[in-house]
Length: 292
Image (cartoon, rainbow, N blue to C red; front, side, top):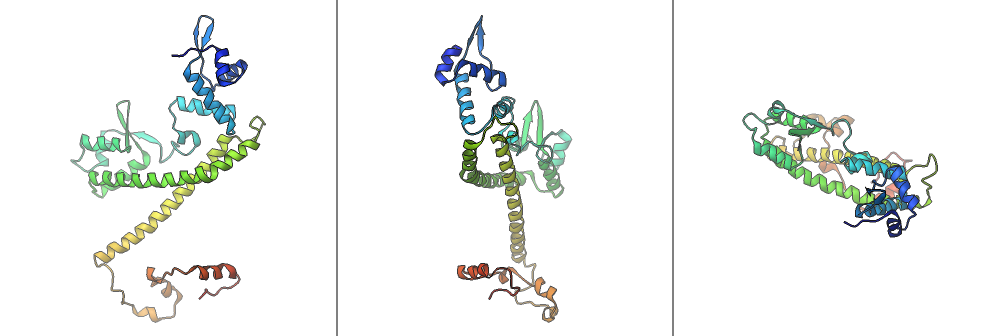
């Protein structure tokens, strides 16, 4: 392992030795190894100083960098540091016992292979000899077990769902990286992170990612509800649970506004062409009559 004195390290990274010692005091650089009175630095210190310089160039203050470094060294996830994960509530992990597992899977289906697959899928974590699950997973598992849904089916659907949500998350992070991150980088060039009361880059990232996360959750939940409604409609038609399309109850002919709304179906929806949409936009909100 390469060994460097503080002066040699300073030359390698282009910083004064006093700055390197200050970084140690601020908690962004781990202590060197000492042999007698001489302190020796190695490649890990070079890597850390490179990270510090990169983060500073992007608007992160030393306290924010120290917070990131400390959290990472303690095993915290990036999501936890940025405030979009590991929070108290449905996302926190809770330890479960055998009786909890028996409530999560149907009777006679408590098999090591089932639990092991749940661990491989990330639905369960094994820590210090105990299985742990998210609170939302515990609640969902109890509900599905009460409906007598086999555990293999649950795990199959969860695997499919995780693939879909990974793709959705990647899309939203791509939006953040392409649209929001450049704005943060531009603001970092103008900001003075040493000014008291000045928002730090880490705070800006937290605010934007939390907002983006809540927006993504709202969009996903709303879209999922629409999809479930459509799937339920298709299910009902497959099993002939609905009257024929030409069926019209007697009260339809009555001029009652509520009746008109009740008989509306998806077939009533239109997809207008762009000129029609433009006329709607140009007209504004001054008229109450629909655009024909």
